[in-house]
Image (tube, rainbow, N blue to C red; front, side, top):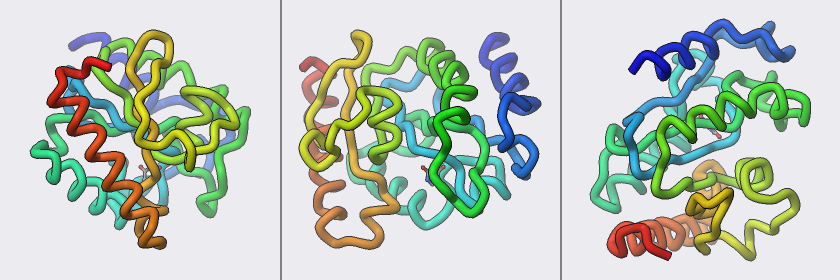
Length: 186
Ligand code: URA
């Protein structure tokens, strides 16, 4: 587990972008480093920054519920973000912040070697898979990214505010369950 702990240590002291000056805690992500399923959100919010843990606010509760709905627990999967520090006032991450942080995410992906990466929301989709892909068109549809299965999903925060997006998110999790039941074979 040395390399994983080393990576955590590097994230915790990172000062590669301006967000290091305003963060309270870095948010490395958490869960099973051997997980088959990896969720990648956008960036820590206020609650995550305060606790140093991903998805612990209202959106996180919904994510937990969805994960339980497919028969898994939070500890079975890995939950992380594109960037590891909170942007002030929850603004969108800037391209240079994503650029500075990307290698940490890529290192996490290569360490975990998940069977599927579920991108949460359009920022994660656009950073990981392809810029400008309309999430409304591709959500719930498995695709390949650098040879890894990827499933674009709506962000749980969006689903908290719009009933239709909650239905979309449920659909996305149904597709994830179908992939699991099919041995992650696409
Ligand atoms: N939204 C995200 O994208 N990530 C978190 O960790 C929390 C909320």
